[in-house]
Every structure is written in C-alpha cells, then in structure tokens.
Image 1 (tube, rainbow, N blue to C red):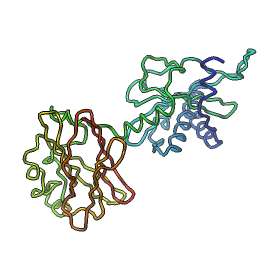
Image 2: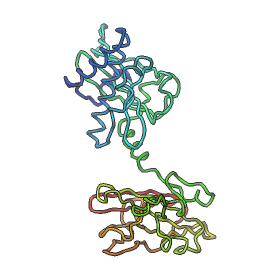
Image 3: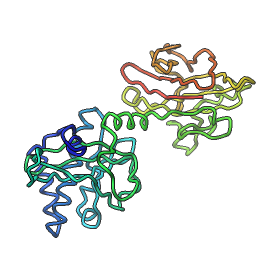
Image 4: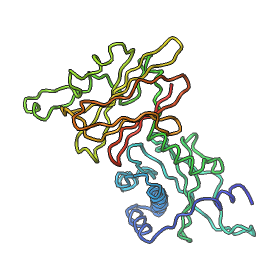
Length: 332
C-alpha cells in the first residue's frame, strides 16, 4: 500500500448527508459554467465537513460569514473558507476522489498534491484538506497545515487532526511572555490601567467618561513599587450581563531574574463591587490550583498572595463565576 493510499484509508470519514448535498447543489447552480459549478460544489462539501467536525469537537464556527455563501465572490475566486469564532479563518480545500481503473487493490485514489489558489494564501490561520467522494457520498478529513507554503501541498506531509485541535486551542489561549513586559512589549488586550476608560451609565448623558477602575482603587496606589503594571478586560458575559472585570497584574523584577507577581480582579464600568462567589485562581502548568481566592458580597476587589516566578516557568490565572471561566496563560 502506498503512502497516499494509507493516508486515505486512515483519514476520518464524515458522511455527506442529503441536506448537505442539497446545499452544495444550490450554491453550484448559481455558477455560470459546469467547471465553476463543480468547483463550488466540492468546496461547499469540504467546508461543511470541517464545520461538522469542529462542531462535534465543540468548536464554534460561523459558516454564514463564509465567502462561499456569496455567489458573486465565488464567481471570481476559488474560496472554501470557514470562520472559527474568535480565532480566524480556516481554508477547507477539497481533494476529489477518483475511481481506479487499474488492477490496484485500492478502488479509489487521490492525487499526491493539492493546489492552493493564490487568493487564499493570505488571511488564513490554517488549511484543512478533505477528500470528497461524490459517488460514495462520503468525505474524509485528511489533515491540515498552518501555512499555504507554495501553491501545492504534499498531502502525505499533512499534520493530523489532533494537531489541528491543539493548534486551535493555542490560538484560543495564547501564552503571554511577561518577560517582554519589561521591554515595553505587551500582548494584545493588556493595557495601561489609566487607559481602561468606559462610559459610566449615569454620566454618559453628559458625554463624560469615568475610569474602568475607580481612581481610589487603581494599581497606581496599590502597587507603588511595581516595575510594570497592566490590566486586561475579562468578559464573563453569560453570568454578568454587560458587566466586565479587570484582571490587574503588577510585576517587580529581582536581581536573580525572578519576578514577583501581584494579581487582582476589579469591577469595571462604574460598578463598585464584585459579584459574589467570583473566584481568582493561580494555576500551575499542570492545571493544579496553587492559590484560590473568592469574593464575598461587598468586595471592591480580590487579590492573590504575592508569588514569585522563576525563568522558564509557566503559570495561569483563572477568573471564574459558577460554570463560566476565563484562563490567561503566562510564561517567564
């Protein structure tokens, strides 16, 4: 058995349901030529196969925002895009399965290479390749690659689907290198405390802004000796409605390159108190909880005990309320 036959046999099968075929046919019928219609048909089947797989893995996608749903875009471009909510766009490239006319033991085969059209070389977080067998009404997820590279991808060199899930998880939970903070390099979302300005519900009628952290509670006074301070808005919208929280971190670097870390959670948007039973936890790289603090009824903020981080150490900070949690990952 050849490597390409082994790849096809080991790929993850996904059935092509009648409603999926109908949707693909509807998209294809809007195209002016048979060649373009087949292209759109196969692209649609590939996108829907990846969509179904990610949904099974509880990864939210937004297929309605796909350029594939726009017949005008499809007319001028070979696109098979799928939006992954909060992460970016995956390109789902179909690989057509052919019947084997030779005496080979395998009845079906796919080419060793798949072409990537130039219009999808940019603005993609990755490329998933899907074998499509129209006669058997079956698709198979072959694997993925992070970049398009050249205009052709060797299918036997694809990474497996487990690597795709790990990659998407890394994108969803990026690791922040706090050592870079001492060089004034900050990850997205980490702002100066003074920049966290939000409109106060009562004062907005006068077109005035108030700090997200009330001035008497800011880290400027709480951490006077810190070398660097940053804050990030944390959204637990499912439990808190429109209220967001501010995760505040203050770092002090020591001579041995170790870093002292101070962490607090504050209410924002003019709210004076935190919600009850809000937890802030320090997590080890293994996921074990090293520290936990919980808010009570009238807490202005909650904070962890100061902890020290050594170079090469990974840790996490988790903010949680009931069943909803947000975790930020860090390394030094």
